[in-house]
Image 1 (tube, rainbow, N blue to C red):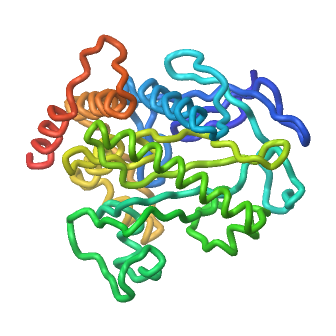
Image 2 (spheres, rainbow, N blue to C red; image 1 turned 180 degrees about the horizontal axis):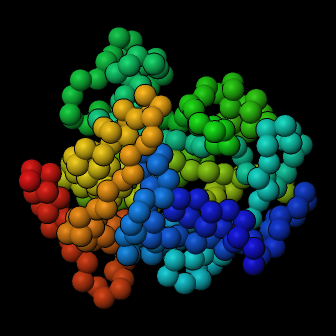
Length: 324
């Protein structure tokens, strides 16, 4: 097999190349690497992260299939790999409304609520977006640590294949992705259905689904397939008793130790970027335990030695570390 793409935290191996009129096949690998603040691969790994994210994705792919939503999932392979359908990755100028078997160059984001760590919170604060789009008052400007509950779930889009991805409006999404208005409506409907399935299920396990994102492809008849990953603690934001766990724990660590501020300043001044320091071993263990515990919370399935700490114990250790 050929390594087709390697991101900061995931790898994709191609087994059968997708062509114009035929879906391909590949192997999707979830690594133990992590990435934050658009830095790329950080200098450490989190031992059980890849398996946790794989288990979450497999769980949701199967749930979505049960609900009649097509996905690229074929089968579970081992602790951090799955076999999947493969679709072509094309540039904007290579696609039209007749193109089939391709990854749609959009990231589809769904939101139920807004936390202070959300990009939407920052955009609302900076008045970069119209609050009424999200069902909020016209002059709304957030100034609270509390979770903001939107009147209803919303879907928005960002670019996917540009050097710096950006949020775009529906009309530009239609143009860039070479889709019709009815196809855009179907994409939104699918995203909202995915969001509802995840939200309702995790609520039974005392988890609050804040937001998430999906990637999709068009098949041979321009039917929708959910691709990449779905419902994981890296791609989606879940709160437990008000605490934002998993990837947010990594962001918090590097903000508290000062590296994030140095990184922002260097980018603003266009000077040499500071290398991230190694994570404290004790905190690395805490984050690893959080990924395992959240995986159990999301899927309801125990795994490994069955000794993963409870989410309550993770929250206590996490809150103690923030106060230290």
